[in-house]
Length: 234
Image (tube, rainbow, N blue to C red; front, side, top):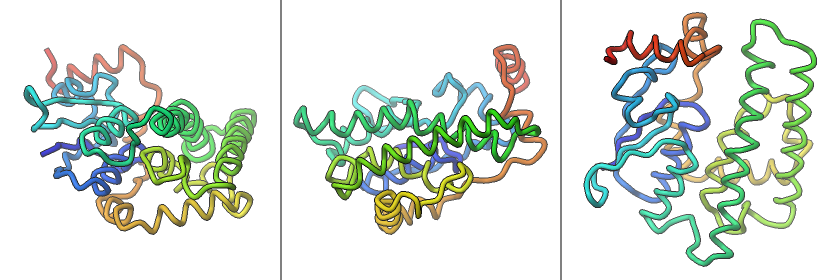
């Protein structure tokens, strides 16, 4: 059994998407990041970056194994199940380079676009334009890649699972899928997979209220230490 420490965010939803695809048994452990649960000592012991998702594979060789960071989790689950990650060198790195592209570029830039366009109390025009334009560039990267293939690495893989949840909220990023027809076709294809539908039945992205802002934005090292102590850390 795999425990999935989860909140319905784009990164969080990658993990049930993968688990539903590869058929591994799992259970959801909710981490309510809107109320500070990401600072609880038990969670931070398995996710030192105080971010979801994280997993604990209770059946790993040698005893329970915890993994944080969504890209690492996807790679681990692919290797464990033998699914959605080729074993030959060329095929494997065809997939992994797009997973790393997502965790280094698509996800962080989309997160900044979401913040400045949707959630920031003030919306500096420069920041809004900067991240909207960068998302447009990244959608162009996807468009060129998908013009000649069905999926990012030809066959469906963890690369598609890594990227897809970040495209769900394209409107938050100031983008229209009509401007990127290959991305739109790919997006709809992945959306209609039964495993994707089952994963998204678990939860959808929740909007933060005013109390949640305290836990989500403006964290410093001191704030994290204070929260850990508030939640019972020694």
